[in-house]
Image (tube, rainbow, N blue to C red; front, side):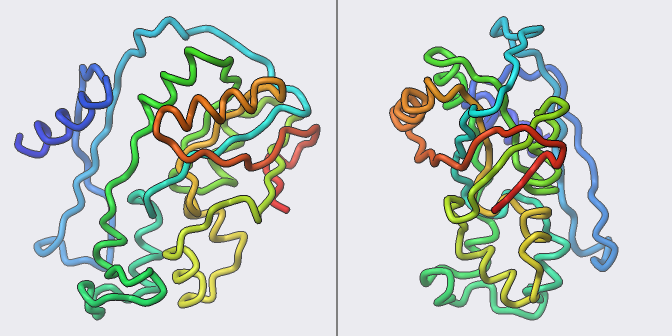
Length: 228
């Protein structure tokens, strides 16, 4: 009950109206069941903002904006734990590659919630598509919000990759594509708007407290995500 009340308070701060909250256990087969548990919340709700049923077709030239993440956002921890050997590492020691922060502090950075920023943006521009970059990274999450025949073309150099992801890639010799197919790489959410409203959207997001970046554009194609 304490965990449920804690999560509920967090979601209410973001203007969620909860009607159902359940817990689940994620499999971490190399953990001893009596030593560690990971609590996962499933949230169901109703928007209440009158957006159901609306459709804004994407077209080539639409602009993809990114909202920064705070870290790994609770995704990809099986790979993180294996690559960084967290069970045998001093999680409190400062790490130069992380700007002097400890590994424990970095990995436990709270996941960002973007509800208020997106609601504020909705009042000022037409949002055509939104993707929450969770487990599966860019390659699995962005396609879910794209219609057939449309591809997200993203410029890799415009992705503000966080130091923790560079560290994971280096320590584990993880291919770059797999990194973008597992982690958010520094972008927790993407938003697509028309080219004409891109600058206005950027300013609106900044006013909402975000540090948005322009990641790329929508192009015709069937590969769904193209990082170049």
